[in-house]
Length: 185
Length: 106
Image (cartoon, rainbow over all chains, first blue to last red; front, side):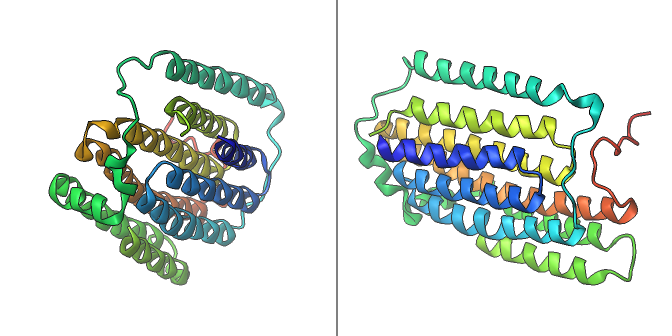
């Protein structure tokens, strides 16, 4: 329980950093903190393979792509415009209300769930277990995701190459990152 | 063992913090980062429920983890296309402010 509380605090601190930090690079690094804490939480939930994939794909490949684009575009943090000053507190209040609703529902309406006494059925969520299920029961979804990734790569490269011809180096390196994601995912 | 509702409550908090970021940030990249946060919050809930249902058999238990694996792959494709669109927008008009990107509105 103590470990869960520590993880939750780290995760929520990172998440609040994502939405409040002004500099996009700081916000992206704050999201990395959240994603790594999430990977540790997956380990505590008997999903070891997913934890490894989370670190490699999300905290590795996807966040590298994000930082790459942030530094390529050189986006600066800006203050909110004056006519939208009321929006952040209202959004915060709404978010808190929705979170409280979901949490109360999760705690109150727990009747249809079976007892989680035998966690051994997960067998640690190893790559062998998840892979066997993916390649037997969910092989169609797996294939479709492969096609989707291919379409994503082609789309990203064509989007990045449209426009000016002189700046083809950015498009090339982005395509390289995509290929890395495919081999990891 | 921490009960599942605690994980679901944490997931709800992460999801709503991400939704708050989508609503309040103006840079398209920051909106995108917040969407990633929301995706991960959903993944956390799915993995927590996968452990909760593990008493009913291996296939049901690991189905949740397989679903999260597929969501991870879809998120990778989504990030590639989304950042490609962002780079294209930034090339045409040196700004990624979502308030100024309103051509679709007639």
